[in-house]
Length: 149
Image (cartoon, rainbow, N blue to C red; front, side, top):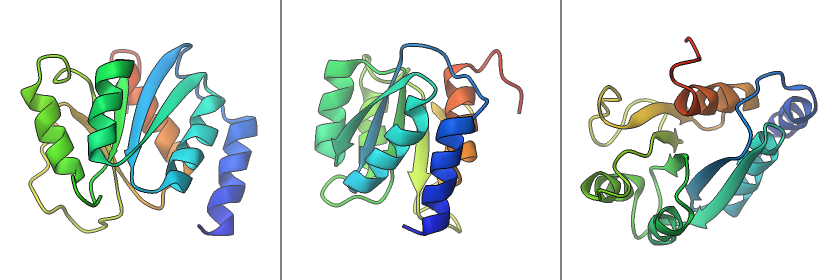
């Protein structure tokens, strides 16, 4: 991970001004533990508990047990990719209403169509991302009636 991203993450961790809200829980489904650690570092300042899950199978289990307010979902993962996780979430009465923010390294398009309106996908963030972008996206997903933009 580039040093600039780490430095900026530490800056926003210390000086970030966006307040997401106390006692919110996010499940971050990723295949890289370092990305989960980075997301946790950024969101902890805003009183958001991040529960990490390595891969799609573990992610679905964490969603079932943790009942998060939001899911951050990587698309490209081995064994069960993010689209498969998302489809299973949409097919489950217990999970279909949980908002999802996509984290992806795919810069120019998606393997499948992405239609955020009415789909439960609140936003997508292209990696590498700036901490402020993650905070704003999570804030919008968790507080859709109170945040403009």
